[in-house]
Image (cartoon, rainbow, N blue to C red):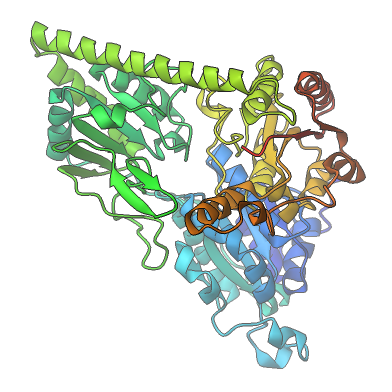
Length: 587
């Protein structure tokens, strides 16, 4: 794209807005075009000289997904522009998912004009709201609508600052169409913009509370930790390994971020370590229940996995930023010690406190600690052995088993410096691949209709890095946003999509089967409203129609690896996307 800047000083209000966005360091803005921000659009293209790259998307939710994925992968804020009220409502689900996933997205909207005399008949009225931010106020950290051009810099600076303050999240600023299209009569100073937008220091722990937590953790005979979001800071990955290794703590992943290497012998995810622990440490966990409870899905009966008398320790944000609307914080779990802090600051301090305790312990205590480490390693080995046996039993199934899909893709992926985007093929990638560095995976998807958009953002974040970005893509998810494939082709994103195609919305199908068994209704009718069949989408043909290299459908497990290798070679050699459609077992 050719740089084009016809004038150097701001002439229009939207020029000032672009100057602010540039000074805030934004590299990308995702959007689906809309007339309510036509002024800002023109200024981004012609006054900004392409300094902020515009990512055109076929739907506002996809635009939000791109920004979400980019922010997860980089830790940097990305901007999205949503067309007045209707575009905001289209993108609202994406805003909500960015909120519960703690990702810093600067959501901008055109609004109004607020001056009724300047509104076009009908269209500007039905697309305007009295308080536009009300539509997303319950699931953004902050929203505002500046009423003068002079207030735009401070409002945008504050928004950008709040989005990046931990715990991070989306913010929304509506930019009045009239302000965008007014001429600049008085210069708007931007001298203090960087200072206004500077993020304050991180939340540090209260020293004595952290010391008490360290004492209890080191005194425990069988400590285990559950990991939520500490991996948002890449440095925490290695600190957590040191903490686990030196103290002898089992690590259980929630996969909201990549926090701990999956093949490390102290990673006991999927084992019964929680049933054996006498001291559980939550590390930056919002939902304390999911990892520590057993669910009988049909009856919704929940029981704790923790033994009676187990101490519960907590290190994280606790009630900081808690929502009064969304219940994403889940059930409150009783704790013995809670330390409120940003784990990026607190974990290195906790490691030092633990080292001080360990330096004074007896030989007998050291022997006991070594024994628990050995038990944890045995739990790890047994769990991986069980997974290998399960994978082997289904290895020759056709359509392809999920375990075989993950294993065949791994045989290709491991030859590259790779990144897995959002989906894990029902966790089989986590049981097969080697997640050895924090950049390997920004964290899992958040449910159907979130994965392809987030994957685009992750691929954008790694564009030009030489890394192979891999998306194990469910068919149901892609059916929501199939137009997203155009974005990857248009912006030449290095994305390898391998379809995890079971031709069904299987998660919900399984729920219907459970209820059929409970209620005695016909099991064979559980597929109604669940199958993606008659006709089965030809995802390879669809991808080729959007300019992708594509192959499939593949049903023979023996053919998966070669097809994926050819696709990976295309992505690695050209930097452009490729798709392999693999038809898989239902479960």
